[in-house]
Image: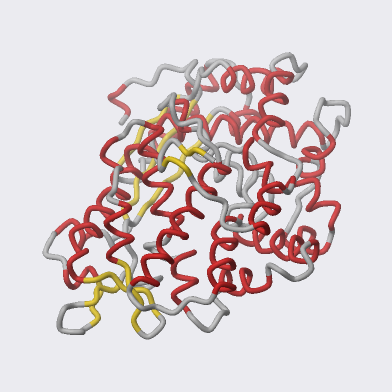
Length: 407
């Protein structure tokens, strides 16, 4: 197939082709990779399907590069690694991360991904077992898991490169080919050769910039809040009024909380989740614009028409007087006490560019010594990336003008 980022991409095996053709995987065509980022960057409409194919392509290139350096990789390992990265996002729900903890209760997409991989493994008569072991980190050659999930994996290499390409934010562009050529294996663990240090520094800085400039952009945050408020309102209505329009699969998750146990043990619940995509949510919101419940109708209109909430990002936690003043003005504009929660939200977002304790990026020095990139780099920005940066936010309906002197 022809990929706009890498050119022609080869499907590596018949099994990979069959997995791609499966309805579970084809669903990823209907889930945007960057959630609601296209509210800010109109070109960011690429999908999880494209990302998964791109990550598989990078995995193939990386394994070939490692073999050229004398790393022994069996054919069965190559196929398993390609399948694991191909399926690494198959558990995502509508709008990717946006609704991850809204439709489901305390279940990450990684947990659902594992459940789906296990289900597919049954369908394919155990052919995905090694891929699952690599995905979960249980395989006895750790570098395969690091290529799938670490702080320098095929997932991150593709999404930074792809998201930069489609959003047009050039600051996120990274030297993927150079990084891949600098990867090596030492005692079955992934390392970067010393001459690739500059490329890794650029990668870490690009990731930091993409998070604050794109992934955590305040307009995307506002769209996130409005969408979640609309679904929360629909959930409240469905508790007393079963006539509200809602597709059966989505109603499964809005009518009662679904937890990890149900997802793992109830195939009907899992199938309902795997039938959902961005289209279901968009269609509901378009219908809900005409809902009898005016709060839901206004929230749906705000989202569909991009009349989003106002957002203020703050370096410090907002004073209580500011929050109370916003609520007072909402009350003065006719919003009842019971509905305040649907027109206002405060919270915080955070990001750390590099956290060594989770999974180090190890540099193989010419001396043979293995050092963490933060200890090798002389760039202050790289050394500071381990610090978790938090920003607080206030988000309120755009029907209310908030004077700047409040903040």
